[in-house]
Image 1 (cartoon, protein in one colour):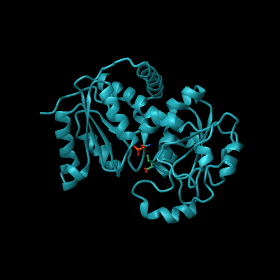
Image 2 (tube, rainbow, N blue to C red):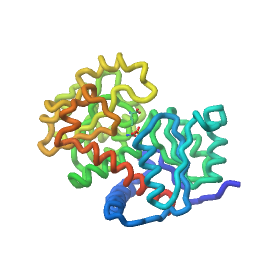
Image 3 (cartoon, helix red, strand yellow):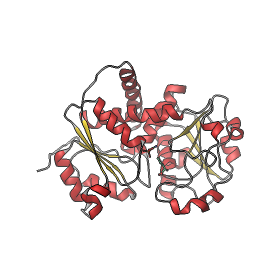
Length: 306
Ligand code: CP
Ligand code: NVA
């Protein structure tokens, strides 16, 4: 029998949070980071279990959730289609019911966004989106924590997204709407974000094919891989389409003097970003990666203890 949870909240997109909740999570992530850096034991999720379904590869998402649960006194279970019944055709809805009866939270990384929605509809425990083709909301918790730590509130600032109108771009569009920053999206023709996300966030974004003017006066420049997971066969076509969209020191020089550079990683130096930018002084990619741990611990606490 599945548990009945009247306070059930899922985190499938950033818009599952209110603006205030997003800000509270950022503040809490900063506190949790300080607690961990002081070496204090803090175990609010003792005996709690997180099931993690990965239908795509991962380093950061897996390690941050697994470490986060361990540090919180709980446990995480890694499941992949290769060695679970998911890969042998057991319906996701059935898996959701079974996992909900044995664990306290389910994290999923998959392809179609509809699949995680369906899983959430059949789950009696919170479901967290660890990336779909549509969005990557956990990464935005970490990116925004990083910006707030380095520069303070992002409200009223200008962020420029350079590259593909992909899952990361869509989550930046949501963040712009929730936190009140301006988002320039510089992408090649044919690689714009999806129309539904444009319609939802149109007051907060500008889409352009002029990467130079997009970067001017920016407070943060962000990019991502040209071919996302599942698009490997498009790599060569995309390399041509995106050849003018590499974040270089020349582009960074157009931004404000104190502008930051972010990339969710994994990165391809010499493709979407030059080595001297990602390894340079304006890059905060290592803090950004570490903050996956702290931001997701804040999220787990929010979903499991509220
Ligand atoms: N940024 C990110 O989600 O990294 P992984 O694919 O390694 O989890
Ligand atoms: N857009 C990338 C992000 C990886 C973390 C992908 O979906 O592969």
